[in-house]
Structure formats: structure tokens, C-alpha cells
Length: 279
View 1 (cartoon, rainbow, N blue to C red):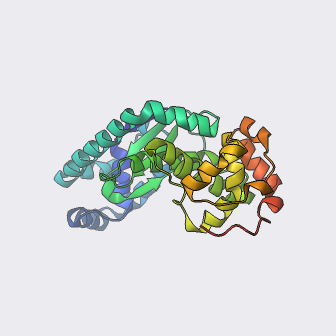
View 2 (cartoon, one colour):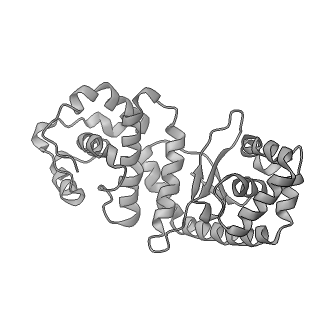
View 3 (cartoon, rainbow, N blue to C red):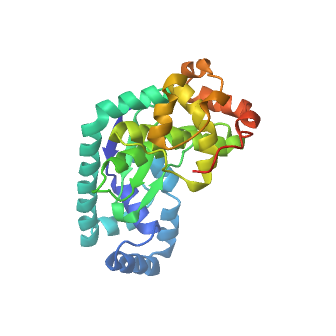
């Protein structure tokens, strides 16, 4: 996996225009533009997918709104803040890239190609992982607040959104199982490896029961022998009766897609284990 962090004027401006206002000055500017250029404003709203399809080479049919924003001092200020945010993300990624890529490949067992991370102002607090039909590049718009106290979280959450995007259309009729396994892979296991502290109690509360039922098989997928499972139970605080499980050694040979398929095929057996308590 490789990530390229980019600040693109059109992506940034579009989100400043059509997401929640991040300042009174920008809100007033949007109101003024709306009053004076309603037609162009409405037409600009339609540009989002065109921009995401090829951000670098996007040329608007009408650049009136974009030019007004670019010439505004408040936009210059936001652009500088966004550039600094991009640098923080890039530095944290570069610092952890070697280990992160290694661990991610070991967990997923399939490759993810280059992603263009289109950085917008973190005050927007948004993620847009829209898949654009016909696009030749992988893009994700990233404007989530940087966690200075726990900077690893920014990388973990970004990778999580990318992996979710990769599997979004896979086995859609079993979305709950797919979501639970992606969380186990990134929010839990990847985060644990990256930080050295267990993250197995983290994630969406609505998925915790399902994740706990999948967890014994997840350890088998990771290649944990039954003799070592007690250590993981103690570390992750996810208890189960090891003796009740047959060691499915073939799971360690699968990739994440294969593991999802296994859980879907065997879901009636997996979710019947009623002794497990909700985390």
C-alpha cells in the first residue's frame, strides 16, 4: 500500500461550499455567493463526482464560484491550515509506513494499490470515500480531526476507511459480517500491532456481540495455535471456552476475503455459541 497526500483546490473549495461552515466568515461568504450567483452555485454542486474522478485534471465548465473563493483571504487562510494538516498526516504516515504496510499485508493478505488522500480542512470533520464509476484512481477525501494526544489514531482511522472502501461492495447482503471482520482486522488487530496495546474493546457497539463470536475463528485466521489462545484471551479481554472449538488450521492460509466467505458459510454455527457474553 502507498498513500499520496494531496491538497487540491477544487476538492477543498467544493467541501467548503457544500459541507457545514467552519467559520462565520466563510458562512457569510457562501451566503453572499448564493444570493448573487444562484445558478452557478447550483451547477457547482454537481461537480463533486467529476472532481473525484480525476482531481488533478479537473476543469470546471464554469469557474466563477471557484475563482471567487480562491481570491478570498479567508480561503487563503484555510488553505494554509490545510497544507499544515497535510504535512502532519504525511509525517505520521512516513514515520510508521514500513511497519504499517508490513502488518497490514500480514493481516489482509492482499494488496491495496496507491490511494490519493485528498486532504481537506480538519475542521470539516468529514470523510468521503465515494467510488466514482470510470475513475482510474483510488481516492478518499480526508478531513477528520488530527488526534495530537494519540496521533496513531489518525493513521488507523484512515486505513480503516480505505479498507472499508475496498470491501464495500463485497457480499453486500452480509454487510454486518463484513463490517465486523473489517473492524477486527483494522480497528482491533492492526491498531493493536501498531500501538503495542490491545484495541479489541474498540469499535462500533452494535458489532461487538458478532465480533466476539467470530473472535475464536479470527485467532485461527491469524495463525494462533490453540495452546497460545489463552494469552490472547487474557490480552484482549475476550473470553471463550477454547475446548469447544476445533482448530480450523486452513483459515491461516486464506486472505480476508476467504475468511469472510468462511464466516458467511458457517454463520449459523458461529452465532449459535450462546455462552459468549457481550463485551
